[in-house]
Amino acid sequence: MDKKIVQEFVGKSHSDINKVKELLEEYPTLLNAAHDWKYGDFETGLGAASHVGYKETVHFFLENGAQANIFTACVLGEIDVVKAMLTAFPKTIHAKGPHGFTLLHHAQKGGDEALEVKEYLMSLGAKKTMVKLY
Image (cartoon, rainbow, N blue to C red):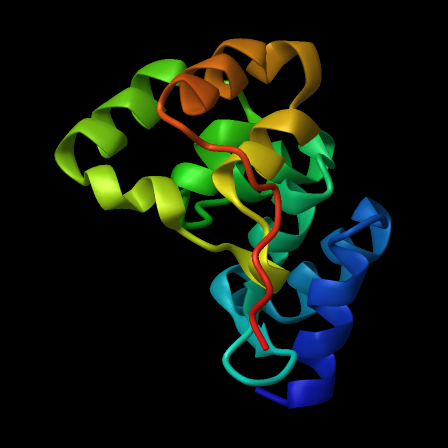
């Protein structure tokens, strides 16, 4: 896969669902492809849409079989999923997503739908919305 196509796909996943659909139709393997912005700051289309709260694109990716994760669960307000993950893997509370955005950041981007997740994360001591990666 051409790195420039992956970069374009991930970049457009932040804000342009029509271009995302067009690229995915032409290159189906983009669905779970990741771009390394630098120093291991990997981001997929789903990761991009999730950290900006672009839920329409998040749902589109999930409906097409993208690999969901705890960041996705946070932005969508999936409290049961978040609780299960953090119960099984408590240190995940410190996980860093694309660009260093935290679980709390993703919950904030989820708005009212993710308020319960945001409050839960804060009850566990989450304070930061971003951690410097480099």
